Image 1 (cartoon, helix red, strand yellow):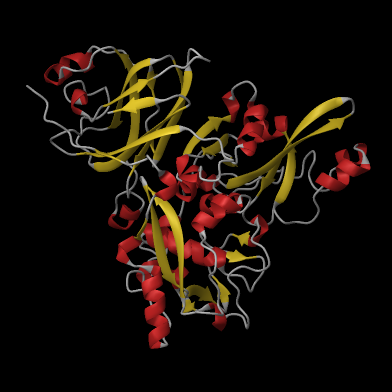
Image 2 (cartoon, rainbow, N blue to C red):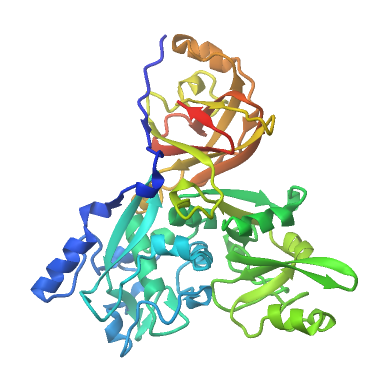
Length: 497
C-alpha cells in the first residue's frame, strides 16, 4: 500500500539575525505597557492570573498543604526600593526556592556569564521606576521560533518572603520574574519540577543541547570543555540517582545528587611539577559546596604561587567551587553542553553551525509507527533525508541531530508527561520510491540507534562521510501522538528534506 504523504514545515533559517519575535498568546508588551500607563493602573495578566492554579496541580495544587498561606505580592510590597537588576547581573544572584527546578536555575546562572545571550532572554530597559506599570517581559526559544512572554509582577510569597527563586540581593527581582515567565510558558510553577539543564539551555539560546556520560567520557574531554567555553557554549553537570529517595541527597564530599550544577569556567595550574586541569562549578542553591581537593579551604592552594592563588581561590559559602578534572569525572555522572546556532551568530564572534529545522507530528492511525520493534508500522514514521556535503579540507564532518517533543511539560496538569522517544539514522543511496517505503525501510540496517528516553530533547553527535542519510524519529510505543521538532546541524553544508 502506498504511504500517505506527510506534510512538514521548514523553519526559515536564511537570516536568523532579522528573525521576528512573536508575542506569546498575542500579548504585545509595548501595547500592554502603554495601555496600563495611559489608564494609570498596574498590569494584571489574564492568561496567568495570581490564583492557586498558577502554582500547580498536584503537590502545589489548590488544596495542597504546601500552598497554604501563600500570598501574591508585588515587589514594592516586599522591599522599599525594588530593582529589576542591582548593579550588574551575575550568576551569584540566583538562589533556589521551594521548587525542584535547579535545572532551570543552573542554566540561568550560566546565562549571566554571556551578555549577548542574556540580553536576548532578559530585555534591557525594564525597571520599577520610569514607565513602571507592573508588567515585564522575557524571550525564549520554542521549537524553531523566538517568543516574547509577558508577566505581571505579582509573585508567590509566604511570611513576606518569596516562595520560589530569589536573588541574593533582596531588592533584586529579575530572577523571580524570569522564573514566573517560564512557569507561564509551561502552564504552572509545578510544571517546572524536575528536568534537565539542557532543556533550559535550549530555550535560552535556540542552541542544541547534548549530554556526555562522564563514566564513559571521550578522550580529550577537558579540551572539549575548554573549546566549549571559548565558543560560549553553556554547560552543566549532574549526579544520577537510583530513585526519588536519593533526590537532593548530600554526599560526604558536599555534592548533591539529582541536582543540576552550572559549569562556569576552566583553568590550568602548575602543581608539584604537573599541569592540573580545573573545572569551576556552581550550585544554584548559592550554598553547599564540594569539600575535596581545590575546594575553598583546601590545603592544595598553599602549594601554588601567590599570584595564581589570589586569582583563582574562592572564599565563602556561595555555592561556587573548583574541582580537579579527575575528581569532576569521578563524582559527576553527566555533562550537558549547549552549542550555539545561527540565532546567536549576529555578533560574528561565536562559532556556529549550518542548521535546518523541521516541524512535524506523530498521528495515531497515520504515522505513529513506534520503534523498530514494531516492524508492521515502523516504516510509516516521518522520515527526513539529509545530504551531507564534503569540503576540500576533510573527508568527514560532524553532524548534530536533535529531536524535541513539543508542549509535553505543559500537559502534566492533564496527567500527560514526556513520551519515550528516540531516532534512527541510516546511510542510504536512493529513497525516491515512496510507494516502496515499507519494504525499503525494513531492509535497512541502522548506523545510529539512540537510547529511547522519556525526555524532551534527544540529541547526538556523529562523524559522517559525505552522502545521504535517512533520519527516522519515533516514539517507543506505536500509536502515541505528539508534535515534534527535528533539527540538524553540520560543520559543512547540507540539504534537508
